[in-house]
Image (cartoon, rainbow, N blue to C red):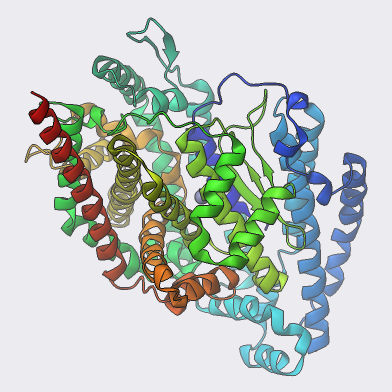
Length: 634
Ligand SMILES: [Zn+2]
């Protein structure tokens, strides 16, 4: 459906992002900094016309019901209509949510967005019979149709994927009950969301600057990175005191979500909740457990990072409260959107002329909405519509972070652009497991490009330090989450009741092991035990590990591409571009393997660790140089 997963990820990123600085009204923003939604619909009125049109087409889809097995022709006609309606919906949906994101206060776009959401529900329910009916067909018959009818070829992957689910599909009556039950599956997440977003009385604290700040999750995420240690302590103490007062309720809500996952496992005959969740993208559960094992054996690399952080922050003792302040203070770099575009284009040069020209063309033709404005949605995301082009929403504030975000979103957009140009609509959309590869690869290329241009050691330290920090949060922290997520599901599978209290105990135990609490690498105080309670991702059913695996895969691709480029070789680059072009035409593990990165082995992870250690070597060399210079001056 309309990019449900990428949109969800974007929504969560937005929740965790800092609110934009004081902004202008949208009308004051020059047109060259705004996206061009007219490529989707020339006006809101045209959008309304198209919506009414689709709303009329939806009920007609029922005409195909019960007729899929009649002939190859009948099956093709049904799929053409179903996918055609889906594409029309996608176009409506992207336009309406983009219009609403331009100014979240405006009522009319919000209504359009709600109306598109309603249409999505209607379309889903109008097509709810489609998959079960395909499944009820004899697979040999479906494959016979595929062999006979050329027009079915774009649907081959879709059809094979539906047939793959047969062993986990129930009888018609049971499926109806399961569908009814699935409406309760989001109850835990809904309750936690209302609590976090509305009802929980988040505290306010006074910082050393005299500023009074409210510590809701966004405020906490911002101020936990304060360079003043006493402020960090105040922020941590106040935030976790509030959160722990609701530990029981948030625990009950997470348990409700886990029970829904266990229902799915039991009803559909999976061996574990993990297997049930990963089945969707055909990811072998071993990929997940191997990531946990890889991190466990790489803790010395994390602890080396913690020691470096302690040294650079000049602390006698490192504590969990000291993990978010940047390891190197932000360099005095400022960028205009034009600079950021030019730097991104230069950084992705190793990806070849087609990529660079495609992105340049996009930058020049209304893909991107750059600047913050009053009421605009915070954060950043990339989306797109098949047959049109990608769109990016940014809140560009001129910092290095914003440049890096542009490169990241450009990675998503170019993935979309290449997949859409190559694939027919049914296989154009890619899964989250590969999506974050395309974005984080560009961040890696940007790092190396900027290092090449850096004129002084302080800038080099800043670039290396910020990449290192993101490896800590993306690779180690997300895997810490993934380990907790697996452990709590396993407890529930053994029949243990999950309560806020025992979730906190479990969380603290894992955090302390990973951060080397006993060995003195980083003190993890008791208050961190409830950190799980503010992370919405635990309701997403084994989602977060993909941040870690994507970064690992991206670093492996980037290394190959960077190393071959000076020799004029293009083997790694072409394999990587092949992955982007392949969209969703295969399962993610197969796509990555075809492109030369085998995520069922530890090789990519070890390569990422090698790069992390190389970055620390470089930083330590710079620090030694600076110490030497200081010594000489003395
Ligand atoms: Zn992303």
